[in-house]
Length: 232
Image 1 (cartoon, rainbow, N blue to C red):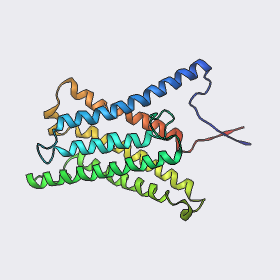
Image 2 (image 1 turned 90 degrees about the horizontal axis):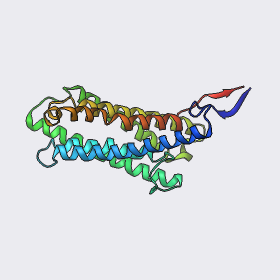
Image 3 (image 1 turned 60 degrees about the vertical axis):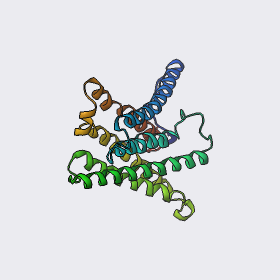
Image 4 (image 1 turned 30 degrees about the horizontal axis):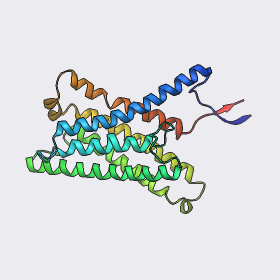
């Protein structure tokens, strides 16, 4: 017989003390992810010195869009989200869409500056792993945005299609975020970044995007992706 209780390995066999410890660790982790997303974007703004060249806007726009806006848009639905957010789900969805639109605008702007910079310097396009991964990230981002846009019209979709579309939206969003994380890490192997950041600080920059990615992955898999049913 199959019960209606969803199986979750998180917290299994934990006592009350261990549960509260886990809850505090989760709250601290989500809070740290917010701080790292904002801090990383600020550091990229300082390093790129926007306005000094066409290329200087590319790192700022991409980190603002994918590292900050996308992280906040996903963790907005976490129970440990910022206290200033709306408590109602409708309000959170509205803020989620605003952040996602800002992310798409920032990503498009960053891509435009990169294309313009390479055209001016007559350098080839799609010549590095960073650029290839970046293009894959943009494709996955557009797919998840398309699935999300369809969810705004549930009456047109019909009840049977909604759960599957929500799953597609969550899955594409997670893939897009993980691709964005890998793309950011690949950017740190480019000539520009290695000439700008050296020594132990370079290793710190490489590791920084990993922590928010782990927090986001844990949140999406636990909150949106299907779980196994408990068999009795």
